[in-house]
Length: 165
Image (cartoon, rainbow, N blue to C red):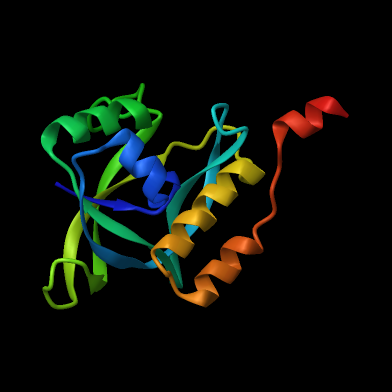
């Protein structure tokens, strides 16, 4: 299945450690959406990236082809049980992305992929560690400079720093 990775899975080290069997399809943009940090993630110490509809904006990432067993594992990690399940921490949605730099010698095109959208719960800016992971991924995939600059400009909030004083 095609998965549009725009958060921590954008970092090749994160993706390889979690899903060694993945295959990169290429760099893509989700048009008319923006990043939103609507759920606090204790494992990251800050907000978790999600997408929201926003006219004129784009979220950049990569399309990854995942085998079924990796999709099942990713569902567990993202807190997705089933469509419309009240206990989901994230919902899985199908989106259409513009594949701008294919890695498979094909031509740029539009394709359908799934994304996870965290359900709102204690919105928070991302932690420094999480944002650094996004920036590593953005650099690795040579995402557009204006998008990387927007990532760099995001406010951060570290729960551990707040707790310390």
